[in-house]
Every structure is written in C-alpha cells, then in structure tokens.
Length: 397
Length: 165
Image (cartoon, rainbow over all chains, first blue to last red):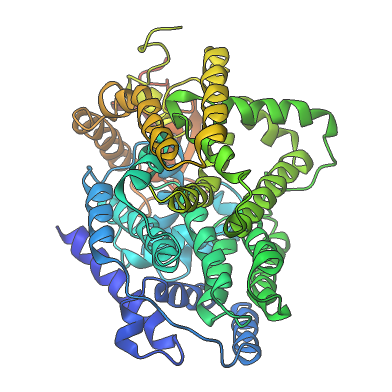
C-alpha cells in the first residue's frame, strides 16, 4: 500500500510540475491532460544532467521562443477508458518477471541514492552499470515517480505509471481522430504479445505509444508544435535510442502529410537531436558509450535474413494472431487519412532495419536468436493499430 | 502442426529468459511452425484485402482477428508460468530469490563484487540485487547454475548462491 501511495504522489508531483510549465493553458485544464507530465519529466531530465543540462534547457527555451503562439489545446482525457486500462495493467503482482525488467529496475534503484545518482553511475565506467551507455531517462523517471523509495513494488509501479502515461498521452491526442466502437478496439488488441507487454515494464510498447502521441501532436499543431510536443520528443530520445527513429519518423510523416509543412514542425526533432548529442557526448567523454548501438559498417548481405526474420516474427500466430496480416491490408488501402500513419510506419521500419544493418554483429545475433524483432514490432504496433482502427472507422463498423 | 504445449513457457526460468520475447519459445527455436503461421497470415492478408472495403467484410475480418488470437490467448491466460492463476507462484519464486540475494549481498550498504555468474537466468535478478559493482569488495558473490529459488551459502569467505557446482 505504501508503494502505491508513494507512486501516486510521485505521479501527481510530476503532473503538477508539467501543468505549471504548460504556458497559455489554465493550470487545472493542463492538470487533466496526461501529456503535461512530459514537460515535467523533460525538465527533471535536464536538471539531472547537471551543468550540461543547461544546454538542453537553453534549447527548450529557444524552442519556446520560436514556437511562441503555438496552439496548445489539451483535451480532457477519456477517464473511463484510462481507468479500465489502468485496472487491467495494474491487476497483477507488482514483481518483475522478465529479463530486461530486472535490469531497467536495477537502474531505477540508483535514484534512491539521490536525485540524478543513476545518471552519474551510468557515466562512471567503474560502476559497471548495464546496458552501458543506454539513454538514462526511463529508469531515472521510475526512481522519481517512486520518490526514491528503494522497494521492488514501488519500482514496478513507477514503471507501470510511465507505461500508462504513454498510453494515456496517445489516447488523449488521437481520441478525436479515432472514434471507434468496441469490436474494432477489441480486434486490434487481439495480439497476445501486446497483453504480455501491457502488464510488464519493458520499454518497447511505451516508446511506440509515445511515438504515436508525438505524431498526433504534430498533426494537430497547425505548423507550430506546442512545448509539450518538444518535451515528448526529448523524452523519446532520452528513454531509448530507438526513440530517435520515432521522432524522425513522426516528424517526416507530419511534414509530408500533415496539414502544415512549416519548418517549425521540425523544431521538436531538432531539440531531440540536441538531447541525443548531449547524452552521446557525455557517454563518449566518460568512456561509457553504448557499444550495442555503435555504427559498424553495412551488413548488406544480411538483408534477406532480416526480411525473413521480420516475416517470421510478424506471422507468428501465437504472439500476434493475425494482426500484422490485417494491418498490412489496412495500410495498403488507398485512404488519404491513413497517409501520416502509413508514412510513420514505413519510415520507422526503414530506420529500424537500417539500424540493424549498420550496427555491430552482436545486434544481428540477438535478432537471429529471437530476442529483438518482436520488440521492434511492439514499437510499431501502436501506429499500426491506429491505422487499423481508422480503416475500420472508414468502413463504419 | 505441433501440439499447443510445444514451445510453451511453463517454468519460471523460461519466463525470465523468453517471456517478453514472444508468447511461446518459437522465436528462440527459430519458428518450427513457420509454414503454418505464414499460410494463416497469407490467407488473412488476401481475405482482408478483398473484404476490408465492405462494412460486413470489415466486421468479418475483425472477428477473424479475435479467432486468430485464441492460440496465443490460451498460452498467455492458461499455459505460461506467468498466466494469471500461476503468477502468484512465479512471484513467490522471484521474490524469494531476490530476498536471498539481497540478504547475502546488501546493496548499497556493502560493496559487492560479483566474481562468478554462470547463466542468463539468475543474471538479471543479481543485477537488480546489486545494480553497481565495486572494484574492491566487502562481499564476494558467486551466482551458480541456472535455476531460480536459489539458496545461498558461505564458503571460504564467499557468498555462493544457486544450485550449480
């Protein structure tokens, strides 16, 4: 019970911080918007970086000036849907059970030593934190949401709160575009591996959901993305290196097929790139760069294997049912409303494939051993599910 | 086709290793039923392409999606070691192992050096118990074998956890 209350307080504090920073939006209106939390999280991340974080804050301030006058109209979150989702996700023992969960939550424990301690440890090669050089925000944010409480239940709840925040942010911004009935909603959720990850503390599904939220915000921005959009882009790249692919894909899709093609649509991506450079630079400087994500030539001869592996994973009926086959059919449908989502999925798939081909051999071994590609498909799932819902909506099911 | 139990993740160790990589161990085993799965997907794709434009066809496809999820649902909800009715037992195993590790190698109170780790199963739990590693140790920890529910003992000044030799 104390773990739950602690996390509730942590989420409330971060949400309130974000709501206070949401310029031009009444506080209580911003407080009801799940997306506000990303402003709080992004500012805390910059603060945890210490002096170098000032550069990120300066980039954020510059972005705010460039985007001055951006329309920021938070929608009231659909509370019933979020409560049902939260109950379904939280109704499990608050104990990790999968490999990466322990590793991510281990890093969250470091925040119990003090604000920013996890980040400092990640930059200290002597402490041998693994995986080395990975972006530090997710475990740090878990530690912040659990208010530094060093307890397994608090860490699981903190990570679950982040997952729910990603889902709520996506639902909030897409709810108007995806008015749906129950059957399509249940059908797109009929992917058993998604159920596993909804009740876990892995990063892939949250990153996919946050990427979808980012695209939604860019599409409704009328050429001037809000500061929340910038914060989401920063959070994406600070959570996972793959987040950069989501930022680039969402930006590319919005620029190509959104209502506005203003250069300001790229501002969130520029600030995100500064955040990437900052973290990579710090890791390089301290000798803790991520070897898994280093560039190591181009394994063009592996392309057929990659295509085969993606097909094998996507058609695995136990993990995905028939989801990807039907999603593919929906995506190739010539419906103009699907263009942004289609572009995002295609760009994401290409960027992910590119990363696998230019990365070190070790990453391709992971893929061949079955520990990687389903995770990438989970990152693609939210956008594909949104496309399928949109397609079903067009058929008025 | 192989039976439903083939590739099922039925032990705590299998769940720790592969529980998030797929609903079954198919990805690890290089998809032994790939032909059948590809066939189902191809049929679903063709039918979806032919029927998605019609209202009734879309309802049919969405219904088919629900049916196609049944084999995976049986694994997730019944067969896997983390299925809802089995999750309590899995939780007991995991927390028991973590408690034992944390009791023997208290972090951050004591500097802990992990001098031996045999396998991928206990590795992540040890990471949670000891997130950072000390270069000179107050506690020397060995983690042996590949089974959870590890009991620990002290030998020659080392804390030895696990069932391995």
